[in-house]
Amino acid sequence: MSVIRKAVIPAAGFGTRFLPQTKAMPKEMLPLVDKPVVQYVVEELVEAGITEIIIVTGYHKRSIEDHFDHNFELEMHLRQQGKLNRLAKVEKIPEMANFYYLRQKGPKGNATPILNAKEIIGNEPFLVFWGDDFIDAKPSRAKQLIQAYEKYQAPILGGIKTSRSEDAKRYGFAAGQEIEPGVIEISELVEKPGPEKVPSDLAIVSGMLYTPDIFDAIEEADKRRSPEEELVYIDALNVLMERGKKIYAKAIDGGVFYDCGNILEYMKTITDFALKHPDINGEYKKYLKEILK
Image (cartoon, rainbow, N blue to C red):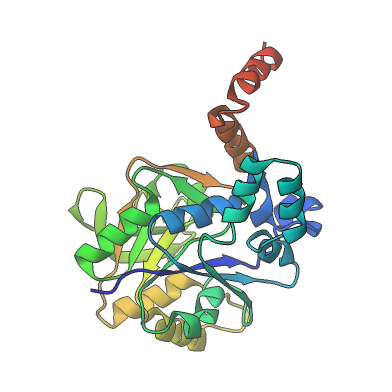
């Protein structure tokens, strides 16, 4: 059985919803109290046993690379100032995993950064986590996806249950036979179907585990699309199902989905994490009570 040790984080988007803030700062680097969103994603992967992380970026994402590298001047300053707790937090970041950076090449669409990582992934199963959203769950979403893969030996898509009509316009949805609580064998997979055509209440929102045959399927989907169409991973998964490949979706147990690529949802996420932060939660809660009187 293959051990899951690699992950891809697509992070090349412009983050136009957050302009002008994201003119200079990638949306993946927006802070949740004292850590950027993408660090929460990386920490979850590492805690689940991932050792090789490929981040697919664009020309405007250099700060992501800098964040996961050593800053020796800063480290020296903290050491000289005796701020050893802060030094420890900074020093551990680049040591969490082996990081690889690719500049995204190819057509628009969320399958392109996955295909870009083909040569580094090789013939191994791997995780794909977006750099601007995550699910906070115990056990983690990464561990739940890996556990499902170990059982079914097939691609596993992470999702949440939702009946909100706006979600049907934002996410892909999966339908199929439930083979155990929260797990379905997918028979239908639709990208942003809209509330009138949504096939189920299972939105595929955050995190996937792929087998390496996804790369050939993406290349086939690329051949089939028209020039104005985006290259999306759902089209590649449909190619795999046409070929008889079983694909599963798992509703992440006990999880809260945080979509930090959406301004309102990002602000809600900041509040949730501030209320859980041991250094500020008490004063922050007091402040919220005061302004909401």
